[in-house]
View (cartoon, rainbow, N blue to C red):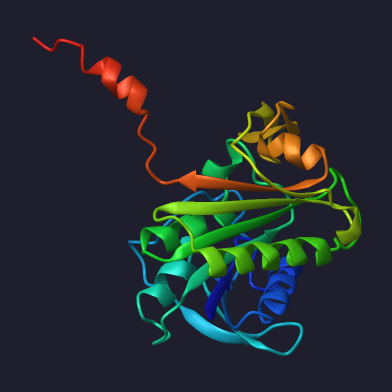
Length: 255
């Protein structure tokens, strides 16, 4: 099993190292991640400038590849043949914050896994629902364990074509987990607000601020599963077509 591991937090992120170390129990792991943080970058692909790639050492001494490109670039480059290897699956993470509901459209973690699926390779995204305002070093042990268990199942059963497996793990000890739950996307509630300030020269600048997002606690959703102590596993399809609405729109007349 040849596994490509990436993220959107940068090649030095502790969640990336925890994921790579755990997945080495299942096969060969190659790490290829951005050289900086691309959180909330969405599905970016670099088209109008050259990309640089270099080999670096992770904190445990193992080698990794890093690029000045976006998370999607760090998946596309190796899948397009840069490393002269064929990869069986791509696992993106571990993100330090949950990626649920509408977050998946912003998330570099999730869209890196989408890039894999677009290229015909199974893509899995893993995120940790860490406590809001947490201070200190996060413990990724449980989320790395959960990631390995999901990857084991995907290896054994296979993943549906054109589907991303989005995994979110509550911030609990392994023995405190209630289990694993297949979920649907819930409703994320954002509390963004526009903050206007002035720079030292008196010119205005703008910041998108506000309180941390929450969610609607509705049974069967990713948000609800996390609240109840379950690992949420949400299959995300890349076909965004609203088929029911399309049927209704076909009744429109354009004359």
